[in-house]
Image (cartoon, rainbow, N blue to C red):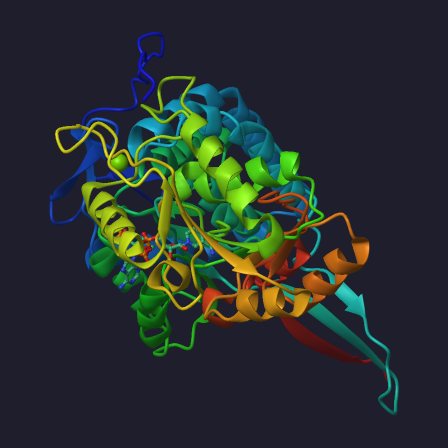
Length: 495
Ligand code: NAP
Ligand code: MG
């Protein structure tokens, strides 16, 4: 583990009791209840958030509805673009603070949270380019007899409810707020109770940037209370959800009342396929960090590493060596590459899977809690299992921890078959120097994103999404913005 954290200043924002942002006002939960905010590097509470429930969600949805129908609806695309760029500037000016808040709240090292600055800039600039879509009319080819002008507009859907997980709130919040601001929708966001602080700080900064009251609302609280209330609320037009399959199934049911539009970004067990002709100097660290990044708490993590049998042993040896060099420690230490897992619950879950894996496959590296049972933080060693089979539980179930499962294969066809033998379809990787193999495998994988000789890069102007049980809907890119709009036909009789 890495050690010193002394030179990092703890932001003043971390501490005390945080409130919800509803209609431009910061208010406690109607129940008066709070939830402790725990720093996973120490297991200590560092602040408290409001335990919002159905009453708070209802107030926030009313505020969002009023804003949607009020002055915000008169803002021009140009005004919304300028607003997004002001949000961009303020958020970037305060990014050092935001990175530290995120690190303290959910554990990811500063090396990662600081690194999100450039991506945040790109994502906000992308949404700033998209403000012209809402209200735009596509020239429709008129095939009606008579003298008609037929127009097809794109109109904002209304109030969007966002529900995001704890593994990257500083990423997830822009997938809700970005398209809302771009299209003239309004939003109520329910962050994960394990990681809400950075979202609350961003909401303050958005107020400073001039986002009108009610356009952006944040209600913190438990998923089963605040999240479920948002998913069931009759005046929410769309739910944008990121999280697990089980919660998505609850949301689908809860959304039936008013037939909400849904966007569901769920889990994965993504294959990362390494062919014998791959450049192993790139493939070993690339595939390793494809699993270990953010301590494996990444939806697109390439957790099943499929390796051509002729290089399996060499690859595994090098992967194991690499895993031992990864620096795990308090996220506030700038030298840490990986931080702790989010919570004691997640630690138990990952250690249980490591136990299961030890009975199924060959443990090559890692396999334990760092610092032992007496450690304060929730640290797990980067772990590698080899000679695994795709039927094993560690190859089928999403672990959401730094655990790589290496599976050997013999032919391109077999690699494709193993890769697609999963209930998920979020992402996949291919490492080869043969362009034909790269192309063939990319085409054959049933997943929303394929990386060739790289892993995990994400261009906000292209976006990403899943198929199968990884969900539906697309985040980023033009399709994402269109999801916040509905088509509307207007026929003008010119006679
Ligand atoms: P989760 O339990 O589904 O939680 C996600 C969010 O849903 C949290 O805000 C949670 O609130 C809330 N929630 C829980 N129950 C709810 C309900 N009945 N109704 C409405 N909302 C509810 O997922 P997680 O375990 O925190 O996150 C890990 C999962 O997210 C993994 O499966 C991962 O693959 C997936 N993920 C997917 C993507 C992607 O883009 N595809 C990105 C990141 C993560 P509380 O936590 O406060 O209870
Ligand atoms: Mg926390």
